[in-house]
Image (cartoon, rainbow, N blue to C red):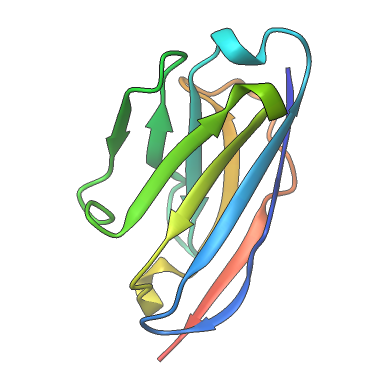
Length: 113
């Protein structure tokens, strides 16, 4: 399955964005999908993940603010990000969970203070 993230942009602190991860391939619905991010000078980290049956888990830093969801009919996974903080600034990627070595271009989220 190939995944492509989109929906990033510039937003003020406290604002919201919704990222989309569009997938190609017939096996999408059976894969666990994760949203990852990499801030400048930091390691890439898992932000949120959803299993094939829709169970979810989140990094502590985003719990209560971010929501991951999936629409298998549209082969898409979403990341709704609310109450954004400057420390959420990063390039966001989607990949399988656990991830495979092939990463897409990601989408840049910039949160201004």
